[in-house]
Image (cartoon, rainbow, N blue to C red; front, side, top):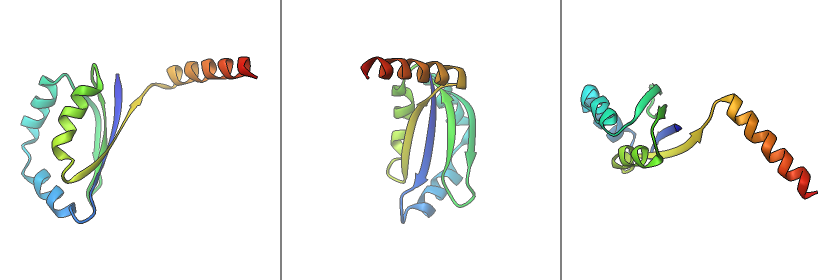
Length: 102
């Protein structure tokens, strides 16, 4: 499964979030995610704080376990995402179901 994770500093916590990130060992963080079965496909940060990542994992549990320790400083929005072909197939299925209900 693929996940979109948006992280935004909690109001008044931006400097604390930046400080934690500045002191974060990036290689250890990458190794931790890998050991949890998380593969980061893209990750971008806004210079004023916050950012997003697209990651692949077997379930949302790993994503939740990795992001939860940051929730004292960051608001997390986690969504399951699919490629456009799967999204289109799902849309067709929804339209079919709705048309049968009318």
